[in-house]
Length: 290
Image (cartoon, rainbow, N blue to C red):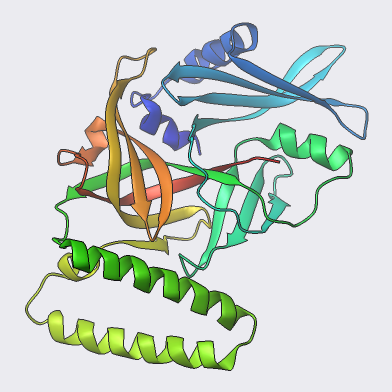
């Protein structure tokens, strides 16, 4: 996760000493801290410091009579729009410190796995005995180290309306299929066969990205990394207040899921504009509204 410091404007690799100085300064000067008393009597602390609009670093650790003991830190990007309301499973990572969330969203067709930003809130809910798998509002964001801008696929108003209707119908069919509805499963199978036939014909004369408008698929061995292609709905250029590096923040719609993305301008090929498309590899994060 530390490599993604570059995505929020820390592209020059800091020495361990420089990083320690910055993290120690965060303990004294921060924008948000969340303190939770744990079952074993220890106190978990989550400290966040902003380094620009919606971006920053979160430092987590424990406090005892000897002071603060750092466990881990990670760069983050804040979002505003709720991306999914599906039921969640949250699991602790192998190192015992961080958490990952997972949900089945029929719009994507794969299990969405993300790095949980607000571990302190989860610990508090668990202490109260109020956490269970249920529908939760989750705000998804993503940091990227590699991306490019593609031109949009032209669609008139009738085509756009048809796409929205088809997406809504497919979402309902997927929900029914997950419940074991055989008619829904058969309809989806026939639809996939028609789609395959259409793509096989068009791919002979067209580029794949003029046929496929958006996609959202797992990337590599790490479960919270994805390769995405989505429409840019909002875009702004910002600056890291600490390093003065230029960054791009984009709100992207991908398979009907809306998420905010941040990328260093050094790592983005092309000029982002509303209506164009972003294609890149991202690290997915999520803030669950418990």
